[in-house]
Amino acid sequence: MEPKIQTGSLCFINTKVKFDSIKEDDVIAFKLEDGTMVTHRVIEITDEGFLRTKGDANESRDEIKTTKDNYVGKNLFSIPKIGYVVRLIQTTTGKIVFGTFIVLLIVVGFLFGDDDKKKMDKKEKSEE
Image 1: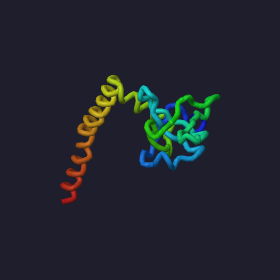
Image 2 (image 1 turned 90 degrees about the horizontal axis):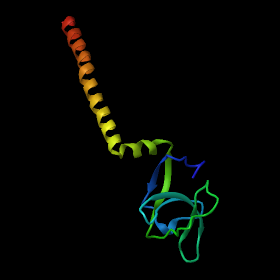
Image 3 (image 1 turned 45 degrees about the horizontal axis):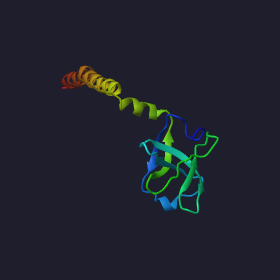
């Protein structure tokens, strides 16, 4: 979908947009037979009632027919590169790294957060 949606972007899909309200040039999400989610632009609405799609950077249209059955929703917006982070966090290694990072933040908060409270307590006592 480049250049409009960069590879690795996190796409926010409105699943409440009805299939029948989709128009040509809308960017939609749909599922392939293997469950893979795809975000492509609608280039044609056929007389049979299915959607023809094509990635903006692709030369040819998709061979899959998007119907009510595999349609997911309409793209609202996307955030570049965040999709890579989300995908990493979904792996075992990513979960370990992310969990470790959270624990370190908590530990650092406990170690350095108490100093501010002690300083405030000392300041209040000296003012009395």
